[in-house]
Image (cartoon, rainbow, N blue to C red; front, side, top):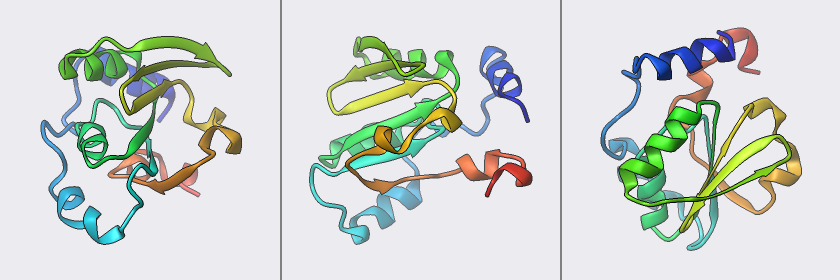
Length: 135
């Protein structure tokens, strides 16, 4: 599946994978992970997931990465906030409160971009990739 496949899904609103609420498994199991308060949580291929807002509500800073500008725009619009935007290292970055979403190619991330990450929350990004890309 190419980046264009996913961008097209957002363009045509074929986003059945989007949950309109925080994921039940996340909310049930997250406390047991004991991620430090204020710890930065990385959410790959985040879409417009409400899991990011839930994680921020638990006192974490959140770094999401998403390919679709539509998803990023809708996340902040549906959250009722106007993000600060900037361009850096080939990504369009939108930030509001404790949530920062980098729009661009997930595979262009470098280790320095993930500095300070205390935890990774991945509901389905690996599953969304073809098996050959998963490693």
